[in-house]
Amino acid sequence: MARILTGIQSTNIPHLGNILGAILPAITQSQNHAHQSLFFIADLHSLTSIKDAGAIHRHTLSVAATWLAFGLNPENTWFYRQSRVPQVTELAWYLNCFTPYPMLANAHSFKDKSNRLSDVNAGLFTYPVLMAADILLYDANWVPVGKDQIQHLEITADIARSVNHRLQQDVFTIPEALINDHHALIPGTDGQKMSKSYQNYINIFLPEKELRQVINQQIITDSSLLQDTKDPNSNVICQLIELVAGTARANYTRQKLLQGGYGWGHAKTDLLQAILEIYAEPRQRYNYYMNQTTELETLLQKGEARAMAYAQLKLQQLRQALGYNG
Ligand code: ADP
Ligand code: TRP
Image 1: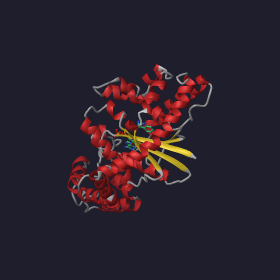
Image 2: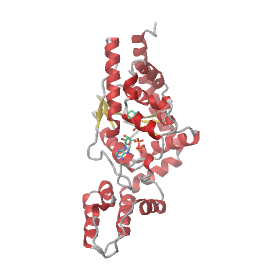
Image 3: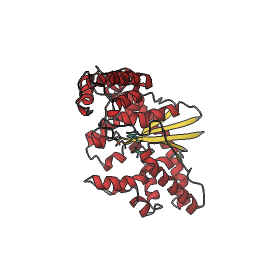
């Protein structure tokens, strides 16, 4: 049975880009019963950027609640927190010792982050190795990720091949990235890639009033008058309606704008309504889980027990091959 694995860092409440680009495609995959799915919260990776216990804890719960809100079924999915299966950090050490330094020094993501951030720590540098450990520990075959993560998957496959070759046995399964092209890059309110780093993201779980404010204030429109005809492509409103609610609904707003007599405020309200309607149930479920953290905790612990049993066996096999057992 093929194994599908993916993780989301707990650095914030997941935004629309994370949901459409990563969470929903992974959940769709998990509904294929020919696969075993493993979805986890990469809360150790978050420590590369967040050093605040309260924030790590809150964001971890919020990522877990988002997965469940969008339909993750914890009965057929291994759903766990990375930090609760500490075998992954032992594996990361072994993998570090098989990883050529230049491969990490040349990673785009590290170069980009080390230019942008003030806290350039060694964890940020070895980030791809911990990610490789996440994947190789569970023999994942397929890893659904956004385009920005392709290089990390290539690094993972390289490390796996190198270990197998050096140890002269197939310890690790070679994984492949699974890219969802349709939703590969969800634009943010400014038209650039939606990202928490650019302050252009939409948190769909906000209460209606705050969500309206984000849409009204963050999406910049031209100063044409109500009666003027408008170019629906001059900002991101219709594109976002299409991504959330489909082409027919986006075309309705496009037509109205092209005819004139329809203000940008109306179009923004169409976007707000699309989000509120399409995500009515996930919004409700998200709030439910954020208020039922004991239930969330129980679900995660069940997944963690399953993940840990597998991780222990895998590590045993590797320790043996490395000369640490017996
Ligand atoms: P951010 O860019 O906000 O920091 P992350 O790097 O934590 O987001 O991304 C988590 C997951 O969501 C990754 O699989 C990433 O590829 C995906 N993702 C993030 N932003 C987008 C986007 N704008 N469009 C599509 N997928 C995205
Ligand atoms: N680096 C990924 C991101 O920022 C998160 C992640 C950590 C991950 N470990 C993983 C994704 C393993 C897939 C598989 O999006």
